[in-house]
Image 1: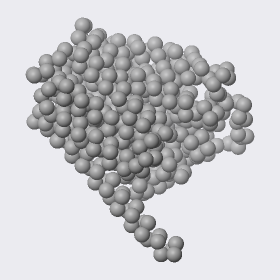
Image 2: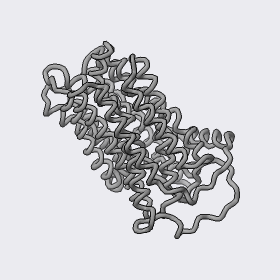
Image 3: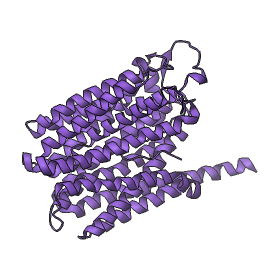
Image 4: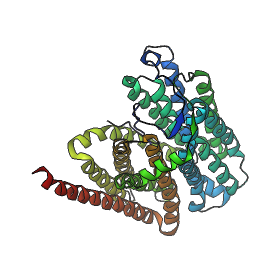
Length: 436
């Protein structure tokens, strides 16, 4: 069963799989008793440390999303311009996740995670002081680039330091930190902004992230099983090219990007819709809307059962249908209908994301770390594109235009899945003569 996700990247790690095209010095494999597991010294410290890192990273990454209407009012900016405070961060993360995951192979997972958090928190404390929209967007881009060093490094650290039988539970706790960070950051900013303004709200998130980073620094155990290697750019490029030449992997990357386009568009723009007539909700209540993310934890966890019952493509069809139904329902000018629509969109998105992301790890037979990093790049690129285009559509044609954009992305997922079904059937028919 794939780990639940709430906006953060979902990576299924196989500890026995090759992780990166690097040249390493010969060294004996780490003994099983040296790895962490529940009940052994260091396991609880490691779990709390990575949980805190997840909270800090994703509270920072999406810290401005619930504040977009306030940012537009403060800087006299359109929804499209304000949306770049989210898109710049997720876009930079998409661009830097692959090279930083490779750097962790040379300099160490723990070191890269520590540096990433330190830079992101430092920028987070400067963000509330931004004098202009341009400065704010630039700071957010730097923050997103810094945060790119955390997800892949954390998963690789766990794969190396935790016994295989305890790995899924350890990953689940890190993903839970992602979930709580992404959700609590939005809720915290909403209520603080309502009382003291958006600058105080971003300062509050920065201080929360600072506290989490301190916890991480003092609790994370030293890596005992990491073996540094010399980076081999040619091997890395070859591995990436191999993945991009695999039609199934490319389809999975596209599905992840399109699902996230819908999600990024909806949650970037929803604040603008709810602050206007006929809803006129206060900033704190709008921030609390992100509690709907808890639905994603349930649907993501259920994705494994859906795949077992319906198959991968059947589960994708159900996820995309649920997402489309939520988009259509959200058009109504009734708060109950909008909230139910958000529930369906969230449930469908997380189920589809869990199916696609877990399928990447099963499909890639070599270089699985790079395959997962490419999925993350596509995923966050979809978030960046969806947030920006969704805001532009809203400015041009209101919520209906944003929904139309989401339905177009949904149609893309359906088309890719139908094409995959057709290819699979053709491959089965081609094998029939050989089995007779």
